[in-house]
Length: 208
Image (tube, rainbow, N blue to C red):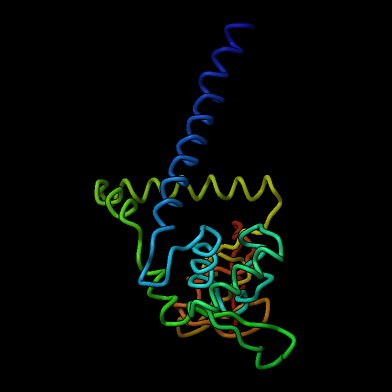
């Protein structure tokens, strides 16, 4: 029994601890890198950079302060301050929804898009040392880890529309969101959504 317990700890717990330490260290290195000045707009704090990254990737249904708050898992006050700083720096713009004036929509400015497009020196050099297959394997593994963490914390998946079970395929290669019954372009199916429902093995809804 003792030998079995030691074996399980070595083969199950220790590798998991090692993975945790690796991810934690990588996160620290990347956070340090992104805090440097980018495009003359001053150093960015991790939450500010994360907000920009989110707005660059989210779809038109998920570009609200509430969605940013939920994605970053921060308090409303912290996110409000973060978005305020980004707006004052000219990286994010706020506007009222065209249908519901109570809703605030967020979008990156051209300057904000330029900042997001710049990856840190550390990340670029790390990726240059890997081939395409290694990067793909690492990406798939980390996606599995993220999905597991989301399930464990009962948080939304914020996945891309192309693997959402509410995405419908129409004739002519067109797509439609089954939640709001609106058409989606191919590019929009690669955006992340607050209402994402992870794809199961059942077939997608089809229209027409």
